[in-house]
Amino acid sequence: MPLLKVDHLLPEQLLNSLIFSVVITDLEGRFQYVNPLFQHKFSDLSKDLSNHHFSDTVFADDIRLCNQAARECIRHPEKHTTVVVRKASDKNDYFWTQWEISAVKNEQGYIVGIMSVGHDITTTENNTHKTQELTANMHSLQNEKIEMQAALVKSEDEVKRLALVAHNTTNSVSIADKDANIIWVNEGFTRITGFALEDVKHKKIGFSLEDTKADGRLKNRLHQALLNKIAFKEEFLIQTKNGTSIWLEVDCQPLFDETNTHIGFMSIENDITRRKQAQQVQHELIQRLTLATDSAQIGIWEIDLKDKKIVWDEKMFELYGFEKNTPFAPQKIWRTAMHPDDLKMMEEIIGDLAAGNKDIDSAIYRITMPNGKIRHIESHAIVKKSRSGKVLRLIGTNRNISDDIIVQEKLKTQNKVLRDIAFIQSHEVRRPLANILGVIEVLNGSNSIHNKEIFDHLIESANELDMQIRSIVKKTNNLDGIFAKA
Image (tube, rainbow, N blue to C red; front, side):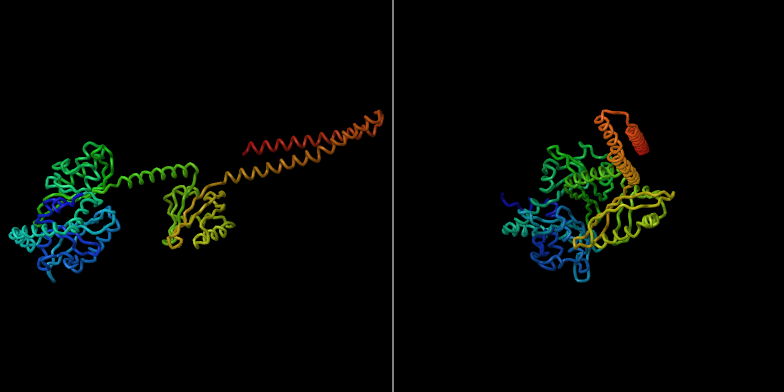
């Protein structure tokens, strides 16, 4: 692809502007390109600012602010940064400027520099004088611009760097006139929305909202911001040229000249579709978690070890018998409600977790409700640590298992009854039955039934068997009663 020229990369209004300065620096802060206006402002410093450091043109007290803004662009290249700093006109004088700063990437996607577009926002008589002086020297400035463009054409590397600004910048940038009609867009705008300059030129800012289901309140806020010439930053759902819906974070700033006359708008948009989709997934997960905890009657708590702060959700207060708006702190409620026999155990468990000796633990303990009743609580806790391994927070759940404990106790009673029945069946019942069977065998062997002693023994064994059967019936009835109460 042939290399783009400067006038292809940036609108004519910026290249020849008497208001906007355009500069590109490398990652060390040295100028790689400045437009004629910026060169003119600092011609006393040098006839050619190339390879001068940006700090040579900034009021000393504001250099740190510029460095912070540049680092922010490098850390978050998908965003732009707005900064207001003083430019040093000489050692003791300065003027105020506002800059829109964004990262520049190369063809491999690496950040290679910083692009800044700024304008003078000083409204003093001194600035008015400078504006008049600048206008008077317009012819000279045009000559400098031609010389600068000629130098850039000769410098293939410089032109390539400037081409990367328009081709690889992550942000979508558009400029509109004072009536909010779009007059220029960069390649980032076309790449994100699908619209080229010829598709949108002279259309209003926000034109893509007209055929979408965007929130009417947002449309009205955008309209009011443009009407009143104030800045706005919103998130909009728009349609691209091919009809795809995407989310854009739009940051639009009104532009004013040095006499504070409104001259247009600059809008920078970021595609935040993936972020919005991730937020939607997170929202759905939270809804599911809330549904699960509500259905299971689970309370959630958190202990911030740094701030010594305990947070309970509404269910936690309910588990301990309190309203959410109670004046009592969670720590006081927990310690007061804790059963004396379980307090030491729970303090040891929490101490081990806070010290990092364990990453997860669980326990069952008892609390005394405000009405005096005992409630059994099942608690689970996990540890959240910093990257260095320091314990930051404990997060856990509480659940009322009192009904489960009652069922367990009844099951224990049931098992005891069953064991008693099994013992009777295996020992008490079988013994008299064995006796009866033995007597019958003797009778069958003797062929005589005149022995009264044998008959008495048979009757005694039969009565004993009857008593054991009655005992079994009684225990079985007791078992039925236990199940009925459960």
